[in-house]
Image 1 (cartoon, one colour):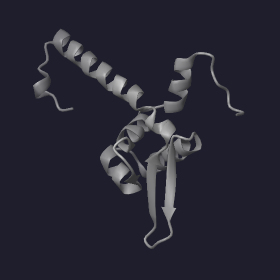
Image 2 (cartoon, rainbow, N blue to C red):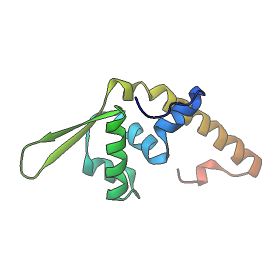
Image 3 (spheres, one colour):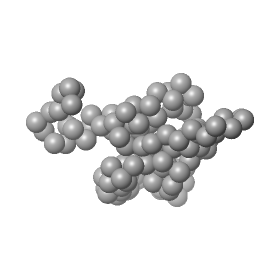
Image 4 (cartoon, rainbow, N blue to C red):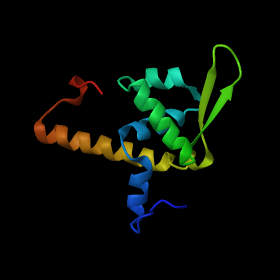
Length: 118
């Protein structure tokens, strides 16, 4: 592998996940195989260009596989690899931490979370 791998193991994870879109794409694919349009719809504000770019990067890193079906209209499915599914505990931990953090911040600011949209 010609790319630089940091000595700090947490940094390797950060380099792999990179940004919020990669994490959200992986989180969505934990439910199973999705088509491009499904991912775009579920991710909301992501642009087609950004989604395409992130899917390609995740494919290059071995996190997901892209299956193209020879049909009209074209159909492309995205599925996590075993390596991708192994990120589930990492993402679950991030969600648990964020829930606790949000509760603590809301408590400190005296905000009722029931009044806030997720």
